[in-house]
Image (cartoon, rainbow, N blue to C red; front, side):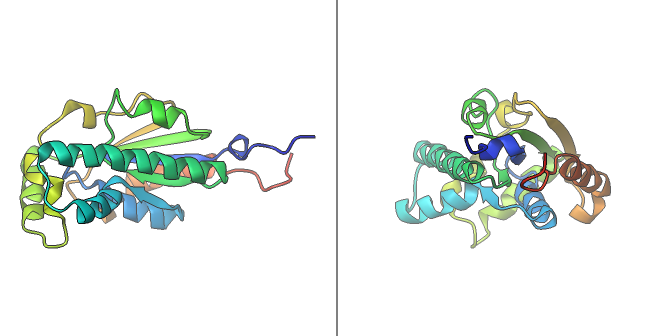
Length: 193
């Protein structure tokens, strides 16, 4: 008898996406801790690439974002192959990032699309421009409203829309929905029928 593939046991992927400045990273950190999931973020990878590249123009920043996403997808593949659930955060692009995500051996996906009022989003982006902890190579000042990062990806599974204008503690409905999804998609213990 062949051993069961890890993904057939129901590996789960929680995706947090949305425009720059919509609170994705803050929410993803909260959810990763709450759900005890490894967190992979596009910007954490891009920060390391920018540290090596130094100052970059808009085209190079976009190329490094593309590379960061490819590395994130590779890491997700390794986790899924090992049977490990994960949370991925980034400004995933509809129409572009579905193929690498569909190729992952993942059984269940839930997406959370973060949105916030445009005035608040632009205020957050302006604050990033003077944040010494954020690499200037991200090009946050160029973070425009791109429709491809302000929509759900064309993937099966649960879709949750959240307004991140308030604190995470003000999101009990979302947290309850995520808790319910995690409970409903829990894998049976190894060796169970």
